[in-house]
Image (cartoon, rainbow, N blue to C red; front, top):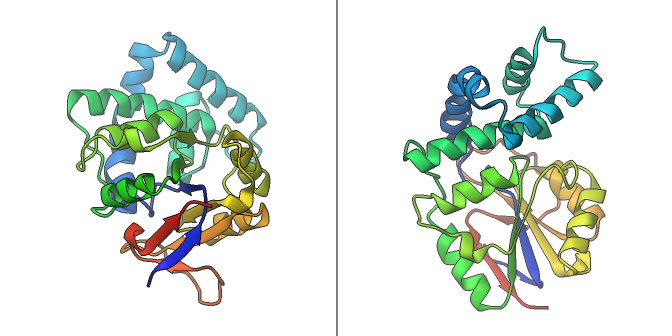
Length: 236
């Protein structure tokens, strides 16, 4: 079923919207987990790695739910919980960076992503990405994908440094960054709580239903698409 919207921009979730959940959970997460200790030991003094570790250490100091004897154990505990930790996501992104550049990783995207990007840009719609994965990790999956390098289509990236994905203030901040009123932006995700936050901020919220996504209870009230080419966007 086609969902037609008049908007100036579309903001896309990654996992479950443009990339299969299985790729993230079965390929990316295990890859980072298997290399975490060695990577930190060898690269921990590098500025980007040290910054990610410092963020993770600050999160650990403030965490009242997860106790761990050291930072590596804390990172692994967050991985096991799929915690949306800014420090962990930054660290994972740095590990994946090496994997993508070495050819050991290749981003898996749905076949409809590239054609939808081309169509939306041709229509004059700005495309942005918002994920709990770091901005660096988002760039990597689109740059080194099985659909080619799609980064030319993306005008902006947002992650948890903007704010939690289930907080309306995060979407207000994204609208400000895009220099658009929220009513001229569509947000697409497979998570109803994220859609509720985007809608509360004034955005158009669209549910992505893909094979392997978590089931969504009926009555959510959001327009639904199974592929991105079902989302017909025209500039507003």
